[in-house]
Length: 259
Image 1 (cartoon, rainbow, N blue to C red):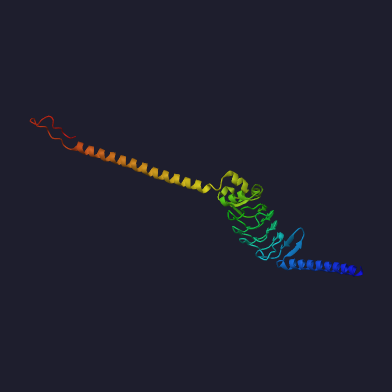
Image 2 (tube, helix red, strand yellow):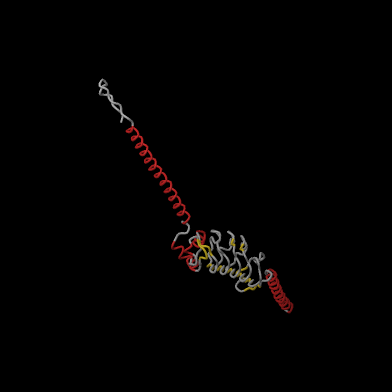
């Protein structure tokens, strides 16, 4: 019995030691995977905080198990294609207060379905590719950007799940229609379908061109008719001015004189 107790005691100690060793390895592994300048913590998933880290680009060594990612208040200028493609558990992505100007077409490929919150506010985004937010389920914050309101932006917002709320916060810095500058995008979109403007402009140009050609043709016809009338009048006056022959007595009466 003494040997059994001793064995059980040693086994329990070994199990506890083994568990501690595994936890140490996991903690060390997580810490070693944390990108430079960032802080990583585990609270309902891996939280990676890289706020105010003077980052000029999005780190490419982000841990695949990242759930919350804070990249706000840095100097990031673009979001490249598929930069988050391995972060299949990502739910919150904060990229606010950067200098982002460009978002590639497939920037959110791999996380569009899992993201719940995407913050792109307070950047320098003027426009994005029409497919940049395809399949994005997240509640997007894109206010305080110098947006150019055009057909592309209209298509982008229509493709987003929460486009109504998002559109309310988008102010047109510039627009294809000058009168929409400085106004909320939603109001501009209600006033005019921005995707039909090029077609309407083309139609108007065609109508103006056709009207111009029609006017030229009518003017030429009128000029031609009047010119011919004037020539005919002059020719008739000339014929009338010619001296007429005196008809001889022996000439038949059926010979007519041209007047």
